[in-house]
Image (cartoon, rainbow, N blue to C red; front, top):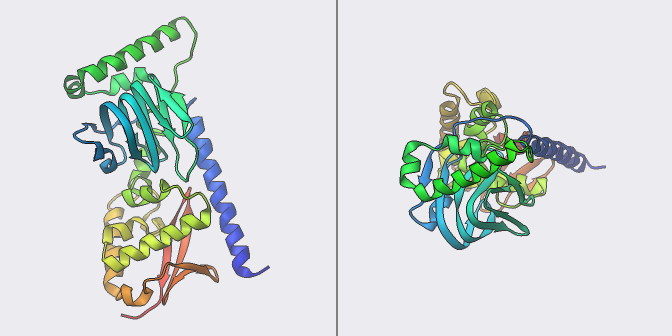
Length: 306
């Protein structure tokens, strides 16, 4: 067996192990308690607003019918009023009225449509209306009284079901896909828009995702986009996943210094990177990647001179 093939299979195993762990974690959330700051609840001004959401923000949509692109899916909405948003590990659509569908999965009032990364199929669960109602601010209630009234109706049905013992209180928290502590500590890393766009692009094979990371990183170098380059740098030298205590600032400074160190358009050329001899290569540039949880980051880049 060639070394390149052996390395590729080892990385594929690491990737799939990380994916299985992440999937198990997202499934366990239905039986484990989770609380987190639900983030800012925004009133929608126009259909394209959902594309601008930061991880942790929630967008209220009212009386929508038709198609809407969100989290790499083409949603179909029918009389939909509800909340859309991103947590670190997934995207979600909370249905207060009407329906929201993605492929074969359809969520109705009182349900949440869950969109997982890497082309995984959408799923539908009951969301915790009791908890969500408690999280709405007074300002949100005043600006969206009809939507809040629908939420209160769902909450009332759930409370009645709990009273008669027909259901146990779900612990699915629309603000966090796992524990609040983990959600908050990893949001800078995994919730970054550049990382999120790759995770929800629909690619499912590890090598395809790796190539996308390498391509986006090289594009950032060529265009001088320090923020995008920093988002794809391995966080390990900067203290790990949490990027706490100014580590994210140091990571951005390192990316800026890297951009200034070469004429990256000349060094990398314009071709897409290819995996050869254990590294992703484009022109004179060679990239090494490191797997962290269910994603990969650039741990080393070499090649070219100033």
